[in-house]
Image 1 (spheres, helix red, strand yellow):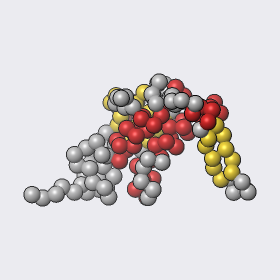
Image 2 (image 1 turned 90 degrees about the vertical axis):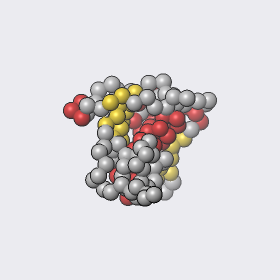
Image 3 (image 1 turned 45 degrees about the vertical axis):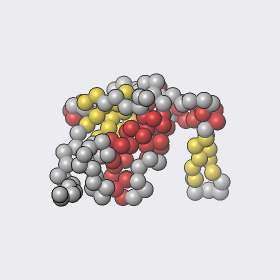
Image 4 (image 1 turned 180 degrees about the horizontal axis):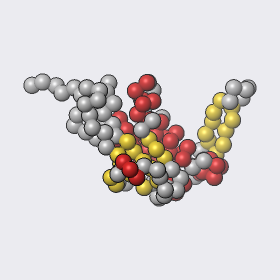
Length: 144
């Protein structure tokens, strides 16, 4: 038996369309991360980008469980002393795409390959997206 190892440029990348309406953020993000890494394929190779492109629409309609809208805080460093922070509820009003992008980014590898995988994620707050020419197929993600 020989072990199959994919080579760069050998894998055909597909486009998927995910509707995030009323989906739980963590469950949706883990499914999206698996598709971006390529772990949904039998030809998955850890050191090669075998993942697909994912377009997410309706990002402003995602859900958290429990009291996370008020209790979950996002923090970042600005270059000045101290950290800036905001609650998930405030971030939803300001930039709803960031909630899902941060969740997916933190589930990907922390390397150059992980950054290439993250670039294949396209998140939009509304129902419109500019990727109609790629003819994305519908993908059911984030369901129990």
